[in-house]
Length: 102
Image (cartoon, rainbow, N blue to C red; front, top):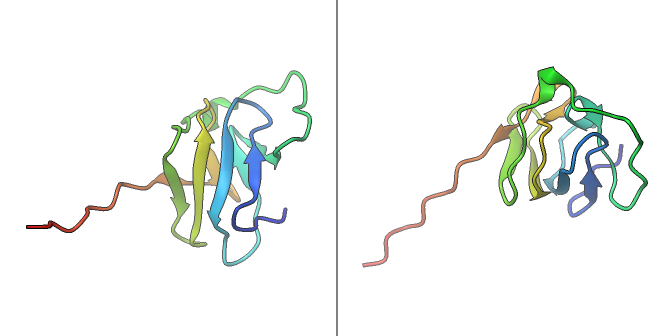
């Protein structure tokens, strides 16, 4: 799986779509809903469903990160499946506070 910055991916089991913001330091398998993601534009397999163990969901416009690998993913479309890298769940990043301008 070639996870380059700016590459687009989609879930094989839900409506989620993603853009790689920062790739992992080492390779890995990005999954959504318990199934590996597929290239954006590829045909979605029929009959696949979200695994109950990976049903955390992703929210449009939110960033998800893996602390171990440094990977950051932006959700460009929300979905029911949760993101994971090598079976480690990705955590939603909080918005960074902007400095006060007085």
